[in-house]
Length: 183
Image 1 (cartoon, rainbow, N blue to C red):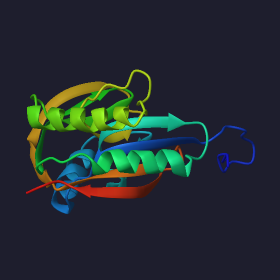
Image 2: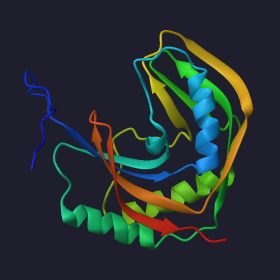
Image 3: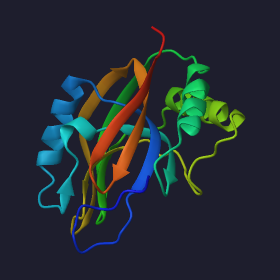
């Protein structure tokens, strides 16, 4: 099934995105929201329930088949790792997107992401062409100017990762699976 955007005068197709992500804790979401609130005017802000850190992404022109979802879930189930401590220390904007970033390397997070990506590749599925893991949480789109500034560290313990089906442009995220990370 192919969806179209809900505008009467548009033939633009809805893009389907499958992505693995880490979701901030409720406490971290509150802190992230405070930073987002201080950004000023933007075309759109990411709502609290859609805040996440993308680990891997695949865009599809039509609704994903059950087969690809099953394969992604099976690959994710093969990945074991300890819970992750994530710390975001800087707000960065480039005039198009504003986000929070760690501000320093996070080798344990990078190792986990590579482990997940390899498990998915073993299933014969590759991410979007040009996908490069760049740890961040997107806050807003469409600001007029760029910036980079330190923020009080925002930290949370990621005890699971999730597979989400996003209808890009319709701001809809549908969780498809969750996998626990060890203690």
